[in-house]
Image (tube, rainbow, N blue to C red; front, top):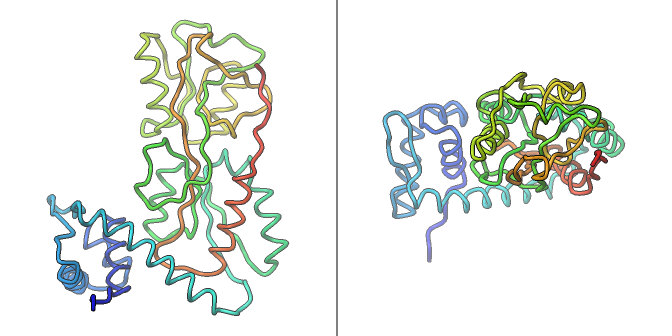
Length: 294
């Protein structure tokens, strides 16, 4: 008979995979570093393969560790679902949700209204921040659920992809700022994937540009676009009235597809977290696209 895997060891394994080190993971799972190391030695013995490779202070997953990661996530989810199925307590309490501000403005009112009708005793605490900061908050156990946006090369954090849509060049429907040389841009901060894609696309065709406005806030970026001050890039669902989508006919090449995905806490689980997650998935799956000028 094959040996049984220890769920507590798998939870620690997941914490290390997310945190990137045994030391940080120890704080997440409330164990000493020596206890974490012992658990991983036992897990490697049970699997029969090395799961981690040291790179300085960082613990990188081996190829076998990456294989185990997918199974560990599924086993943890099934365990949590099983326990939740036999938990007959009323859905009440506090759940912490993180979302980029453009998605908060676009569909959070509907999500919160539907969830409140089904769970009147539940309290939702909302944090609006860009995706990189939301991922950090999830790792630090400051959020229970996060809605994140990313290009198609995702999958780093165990996220559940809910929606795929095109990333689009946008300008004001009432101004011709996109015809200026160099083209003025309103973009996210330097670490923003959308910003990197936009600049790479312009450099590939040799078009001059200047970043006129840079902000984590998509509301501020969109304001610069609708005021006719700059061109930007946005996912299809974030289009607003007064914007015009630019195409290759306007000299702007096609950008990569992007994803809206859901992250659930790997620190804890509850029926409340699962219920809110399902409301979010349902809302995003049925999201209508706002009209934009041609």
